Length: 212
Image (tube, rainbow, N blue to C red):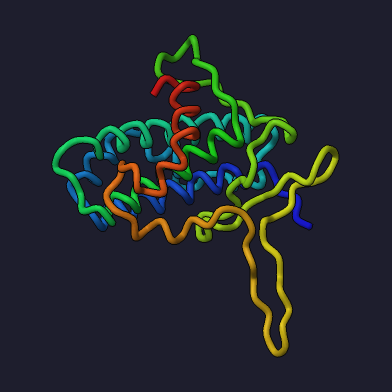
């Protein structure tokens, strides 16, 4: 059983955005440099000497979550639109980038609710969802996209979608939930045949909420 600290949501989003940018730098250095100018890096990834997320007070965590989610949305919106325009990337490269974009969208949609900030056009007031309002198969780790948190019913703490299967002389981890890692070898997105099309409702939900 694993109860997830609230602060790990911030860490998860930062890690996912790092993975996205690392993949973008590898596949398209010029688009990578352009993308860096579209969001505040210190707000998304933290400034030098920043207080550890786990050590923040509740109010400090809420403020940091506001910053991280808003900057992640700015990066997401820019790159999503950029990939729709020439020069187009090879299919496998774009599929990998769109996978990271879809996971970031799912985490934000599953974990938070967004309301337009009346004092800051283009920004949102971010609130973590109550446990019973969070999404299914919530992502738990940026390094293993198959790992998820499952809702086991009212009053039950979240558990990881990972079990340990013991067999003679070995132990292996078995992830539950829809597998994601095999999506990286798919044709250029977006296409009807691309498995990331299964995430269209998530993208639509995020778009409808944020207006992006």
